[in-house]
Length: 87
Image (cartoon, rainbow, N blue to C red; front, top):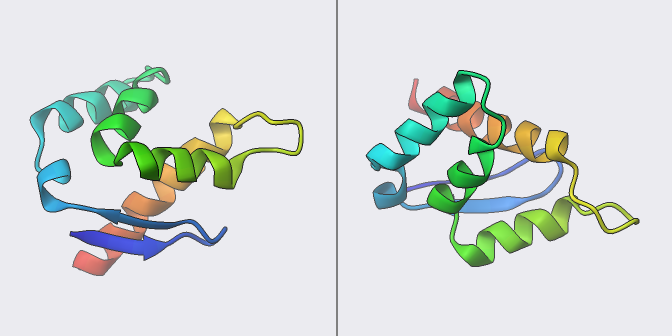
């Protein structure tokens, strides 16, 4: 399991079975290849529905939208933080 809190204050816990998933790797590869829409699949595979809602609520602007860039930055931070923890 990986867990932590982002700089903006979002707390997350991601179970090993969610991370050890070939479909997640496929979606991450799609994102790496420039398919921004794959980010939605990554979120569904990594986070529980409750965690995804909490992330969106955490990042929601006063106008009610969830900025794509903020979600991308949060995902990147989660991966970088946990990569550093493994080293």
